[in-house]
Image 1 (tube, rainbow, N blue to C red):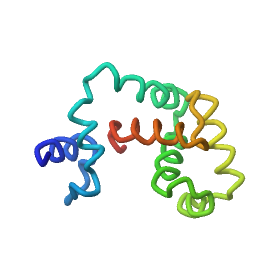
Image 2: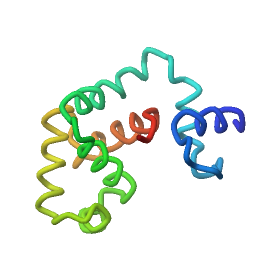
Image 3: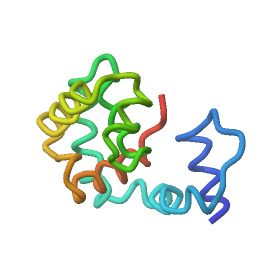
Image 4: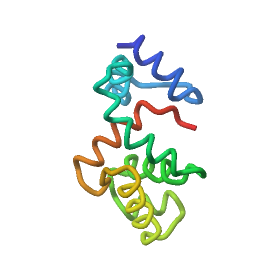
Length: 120
């Protein structure tokens, strides 16, 4: 598990100096299986979003949304935007990615996919 965590950290979070297995247990587990075809389904919506997101704003918003557990006010404050702007971005993510981050199943699948994408 520690080797998986180390490999995950090197690829996905190269700027992090200290990683906790308790915090990154699920991402490290997913990282071990990153080349499995089944995980491609998690990445498809994010690839569509990336293709339409030249500025990286949508992925940044999605990472913040997941980091704040879907709490609109906290997420908007962290991004420095109004809640209406956040809602617009989330609607755009749902439209482009064809997965709704406002629904639990959508947020979960997007969160899991994000764990496999390097932080840019």
